[in-house]
Amino acid sequence: MIEPSDSQARRAAQRIGLLARKSRWRRDTIDNHGGYMLIEPYHNLVVAGCRFDLTAADVVELCNEEV
Image (cartoon, rainbow, N blue to C red; front, top):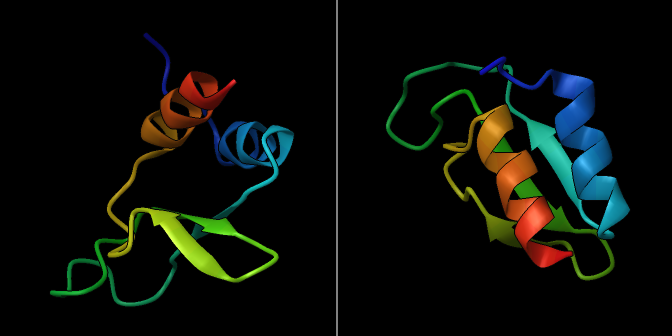
């Protein structure tokens, strides 16, 4: 299976009213794994991936489950 792209992950999150934020700083540190975090934008709450530990495929899968 082909890995979803950055834009596909962001669009999947946007369809259900979330933001997919990708970390681009200090990959592989204790609190930052260099992946994605799903954020509820109105209250700025982390829904999933609090340590930036989601892949693009994880984001798409989680967003498809919500629909």
